[in-house]
Image (cartoon, rainbow, N blue to C red; front, side, top):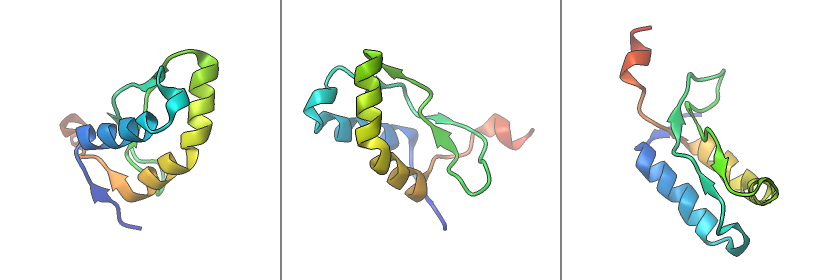
Length: 86
């Protein structure tokens, strides 16, 4: 399946907007989306970590699981310049 390429900031905004609608996740924040090498047919980005209480983060990740899967299926971010040359 072909993915649309979107800016990292747009992807961050989509994730944060979804979190904002989840009242019990107000104190949880994702770190900015980061490029990674594509694994098989997967996307080329990841959320490298989260801030907040570990239990809160875990609960929010469970609630976000399907939404994050949707984003991973639909979107890639621009390739990193230095990764193309390696």
